[in-house]
Length: 189
Image (cartoon, rainbow, N blue to C red):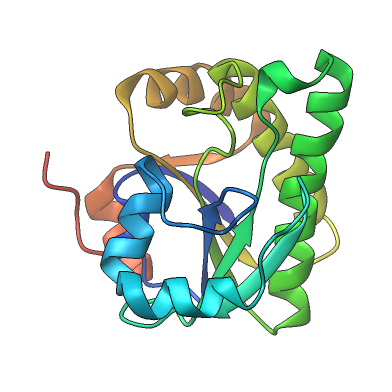
């Protein structure tokens, strides 16, 4: 079991659970959320989400994976950075990762794929969001045996992760390498 950072399309990950960077209303959005809805089957996923919405910031809920290769989608609403004082935003972002990881464990998941929560349209500074994600995932893995992918989509986040990972003992892998472990389809770029 381990922790990998990879550049890929999270919706193609063949893991037990994929984490959706959800909004509190659990409606189809853009970015990661939109890609997951599209790949899972938007109408079925929206119907399942309507039964669980709304959720509070940092809270997690779970649905079926529908047409995804993942069995489950764990929806978590990370903080909108500018809606909070920096310390509160950090606390909520840390809770978002912890709550998703705990839900995965409770559901018996052995593998999970995360996007970089709150770092897109929610405006969390990417480097800080990356540091928080790595910190929370590594702390969780000290006590739980699970494979965790942190799936980054943009080149800036990948570059920042490469700067950080050496000091943190995390494996950076190319899509083709991670494909062999998790049977994901490689990214198109």
